[in-house]
Image (cartoon, rainbow, N blue to C red):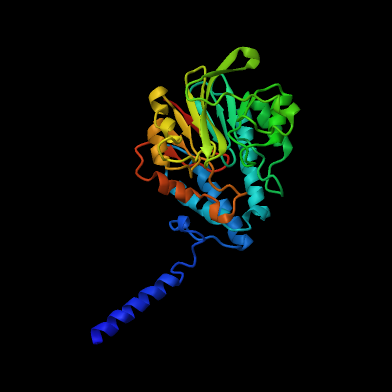
Length: 354
């Protein structure tokens, strides 16, 4: 009888534990390995944190091997940017604009004589420069509404510096009509997935829609036709139905960059991994620019087989706070990877050399 009472008590305790929230600080199970978000925080702490993190990153630029203190600074940025109200904070907006202003000023002043210089701008936006050509991916001003955005004049300066821009898919954190118009006004190519902005036929007719294929190579002429990029638009997807052009871009110097947009297709047979797993077999890839939360980033890396990974899409401020992917999770996802990788903050750059 005593044993039966003890067994029943244990059973009831287990049931109660299962019903009670064991980790009330979690906004979702996927954030179990990162610090909890806050609804708000004192401005003094935000200001001091951003200043400290910025100084650490400036003093320890991206490099291989990574300086350990960089990770501490990026994690502190995670803490600040995972305040629910962070996009509406003037201190955060000023930090973002200052980082982007400095990056664009560097781009304007930087001539590349060897290798590739790669700037990470905002979200999954990158600026790539080689000795012969400059190109950009998924450039947006910030959020489509509100004050978390850069001035139009900064976008104009980016369009002045970049010879061609690539848009991976339709979401507003990757595609900006404002940016596309700036490139078109300068008679510079804008590559986009088929059907993007088809609601405005006159505008859409000015875009370049490369055929989505695993093998077809498109020649994109810039500099009045004197320079040509070799481009493949792999048929990627976000979820089952959103078209994502995963671009493979090869420069005249022979450097190859793969940018994934929000690639997150199924891992099942017949899905996107059927072609992802063979990208590296078909072409030597120098740098992979993946969205940090892509489906199985380690498996993607094995398929693309790049010499270097530079992740993107951390801390997209337009996402709800539980889906603001953080630098911490990027480190977790890539832990143990045999591939060299860099985690960079807004406005940072890295000079890639073979």
